[in-house]
Length: 343
Picture 1 (cartoon, helix red, strand yellow):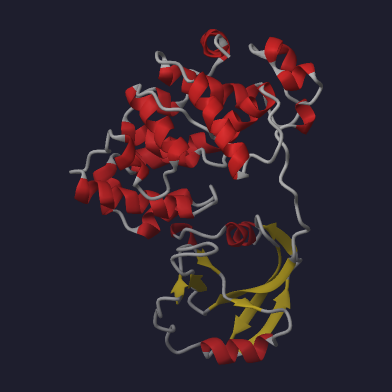
Picture 2 (tube, rainbow, N blue to C red):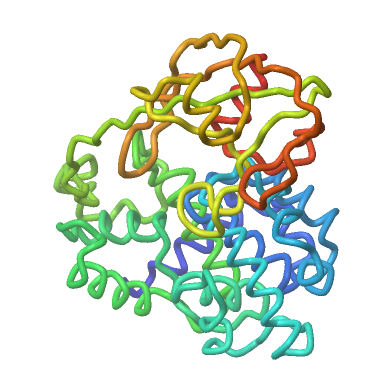
């Protein structure tokens, strides 16, 4: 492993990604936001979201002063919304405890919501050239294959072994370039599927390549069949053109986002709408079912258009259920956004 970093850096100079938006001004703030967005999300997806986020939230002070709804609106579509909520919380902590300046010490960064050891290391390595090892999904894949480490990387013994390797491989110099290089290698060459092993700069001593184990490593987590849940999403509109929307609780699925009122499939629409929202249904119509998949279950959604009797006064906002005329200003849950896009 003595020349691992050198070979990787040489490859990165010629083939790495050098023009990503967050590389043009490597402030701690910009690198932080990019690293959080890149968690479980591909670079090509992140770039337009990052650009829009930076244009709207110019600095940590702006982000800290914004409402959570505003932050979620600019995050809508990226998924894993706890990341956005944690960014907002972290900005407030930085404003209160660090005079609005992103901390430069590892322990202080690690203490912020939504930041683990790898993300903390990546932020400080790229923005301040501090020597910290990283171990995101791309790096786990590169190291597991290079050293033929079997076992699911989420298991503690396997993860510990990979951290030791990551620490060993991280050079004393050129840490920022190395950090980007090993992430780039995993993203563009040592890919999960159809890796380009022939063009890999470290293939001459890659044990998985030599032993024909590339397809088997890293070991996949044993998967269980996902359960299926069913819901009816109600599209209720009053005579003024307002939609009845549900503001989701701060945590949990679609935390803090706006969704449509839900019923189970065995509930009678007319009676449930009257009971839950004191509205009288004229008629209703189910639209085609579609499936939205979470990490731990499938959700089969049946949109239902509901025509109601005119109401004298729109139901006062209750906090949870609210009438909205302009849904484009709301941070919508992904399947709800899909429903409105097809209308």
